[in-house]
Image (spheres, rainbow over the protein chains, first blue to last red):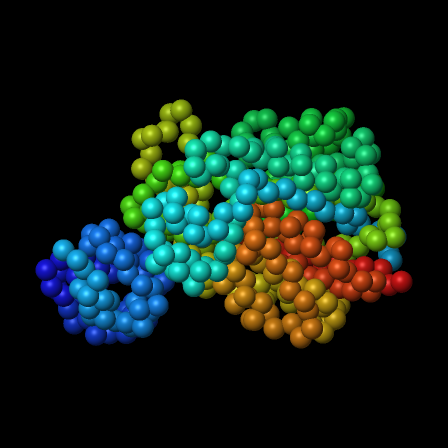
Length: 78
Length: 346
């Protein structure tokens, strides 16, 4: 996961949602098909891939895919 | 009371093993505090009991074990001897075996024989369906004392070694929503001083053209291992959308049927999907004075057992003249159900 584009590609593949880079700043609740179970699935996959722990309250504050990406980058210890 | 009524004499329940909280589940499945926070926030089911020991993977209770325990407890509470039971009806989605039916294994353990027994293949409306079948048979005059049971043990599908990160969202939710358990109630045609009259029972299939919201598969020697379908999956979005609407429709149906007003309802036994969904449904039903009787935050969603856990909590607190309404929805092929109870005025 090199950059935001890569991250959005992972969201598309893992969740089966038709999202692109243009959706990066869209509010999560405005993404068609988005829901809390998909959020959990995404977070579990991200934690497995990065080996870092994410905070749910921080994720809920993030409100957009680019916001979640920023959290992942901040938490990532390569 | 109407002499043609059927009365609820007592209820009993059984849960396997110790309570498992979300921290315990998270730790067993290699999940962290984020996962636990998600369950607390979006599901709000803090505890459940499982027949499977999550440390060893051993199945420590069968549905027949729990049915025997719940049935005996209900009979003792009602002061009814096993030999006085002349009808048994059980609802379950997860019988121990397809044959013999679990109801008959429970009968054997309780020393009950020579009577009519029935088992329904049912889900979250199963307790209501079982109560309905028993009540209708009793109203014919053919039976006087029934032991009605409902329960589920999902051990067959409870893989404690599964990697949760590999599960689809539709499978993932089942891990946190459900618990195992069994409940029972004793019904009689003769009122006792504390008996509660079953005024109405409502069961209605509304699945025409509607896709199943919950699917549980079973596999045998020919298709075991080669069938790629998941053993259990839930369309939680459809359930979130339809169940609250159906709950309102069931309430109206029951109230119209018995001629009660919303302000007459002293106790509400709402559908028990999860702590969060149940709270949403209770808000939507907006009954003015009804006290909520729920169990899902302690038991998880125990399917066919749910209404019995609620009845066990309700019966000791009902006062003479009180009215109670129970509501359940089966979201597999969509069955609306409910019941109306009344305790005789002193």
